[in-house]
Length: 51
Image 1 (spheres, helix red, strand yellow):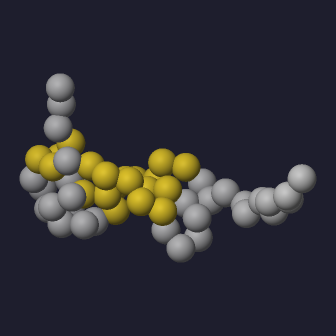
Image 2 (cartoon, rainbow, N blue to C red):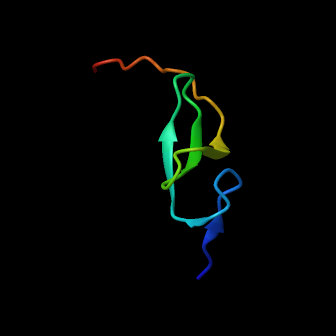
């Protein structure tokens, strides 16, 4: 296994994912809470239609 080195705090860290306000999904450092990189682009909101 390999640990990622955060570019902001320069420490080995675990990585988590979260959604930003625009809907894009990014990876972030669990130690310093800095964004590391984008996982996926923002998705459009689809309407849910009850059948």
